[in-house]
Image (cartoon, rainbow, N blue to C red; front, side, top):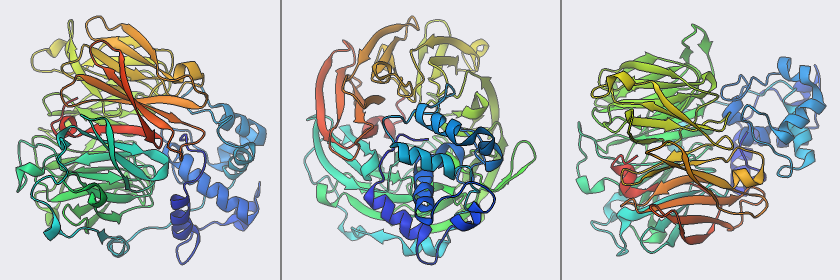
Length: 552
């Protein structure tokens, strides 16, 4: 379950229109679901359905089959009973599920506990025609500027997810000023820019890092132009799913691909206008030989050395390497690996993609050059690298690392099969932390690796981060970012030259008020430099230079 408490008004309206009202409805309404067990009034059923879709479906699935989270079908939940389910929702589990006591109301917890004992409703599909009808161009291509119009150092901009208000903030990394707040989809999960690709090149090389594409959890895609004046940076939008997580840009700058959690498919769009061009179903047979209807699209990345995307199928345990050089005759290499795929990152060479199969407690390595599985690394409970981190270890050479959703630990493995073959894809060391976390980040010029502990229920721990020395693999410093009740520390990003580390602080109880902030640290001394305030639940932060140049 996510940390969201109250429903975004915009998101509520969108979901109500899409999933409840009009011609598009969930099947299996309250009356039918009530016949065989626990029941809710129609109004309570609709509220619980919306809460589940927003807070629980990401881990447990729309159909409740389970993935990162456990299977929540009635055959399992009814065995636990109402009171036990309420306690699990309220206090979380040692396996990595968040605690909701003090965040969600007791009434909402009770509703959810009852709702997950009822048969899950089946959401609608979405056609290409529906997607095209939701596509809007706010700034025509003819009005795109040929140079930045604001006089700022846009290559050191940070684009920051303001999670629960459906916005992205653009922050000037030099001046530490918020440039603008851009409306996007609800709870943007990730942003991607046009990146450097060694195999294909965009028509205009200056476009690298300029255009950013967001994917909201409501499946809404927006295109941002960082050269525009602040009031015109949102240039286009569309919607390709009702529930979604990731997006990527082709190296030639022609296409954008977005992946749906529901419906389970991925969609190729025109990168200039966001017009949807092609829909590909992700349903199929998993690595265990079982057909999966809810096969969700997890991480998507452009491969740095080929005209392909890596599109990861969470429930199938497959990575699909999709060649976009001819989208009319799409070539897809389906690479079997492990369930349930989530977030990943490339090694420093850009050849090997390292992705967490978190519910299987594994890191999967894909050789994007050979288009095949390279290795599978066994880890502790539920690895979750987020955008990941690579660095050099004195003993093992080049390494990558991940924190875990289910245990307080940083796991580090060798990732250089050429010059350090004996250490490649083997665990180099593990560093204990005080609690489970979501993100790890470093920079080639930094001596440290930063890890958060957001998932621990104790405020002192979830408000603190660990700074780990690259030379020793030991914790060099524990930094508490805040001691204000209800706030947590999460996610890191370095500025363009690697001299600063930015970390987010946001309020779990009230994320729709501008009371979040970003704490900026000196990357060498680890001393706090300043705080950027006036942000709405800032989570993921993406530096233009670092992300468009594959700096991890």
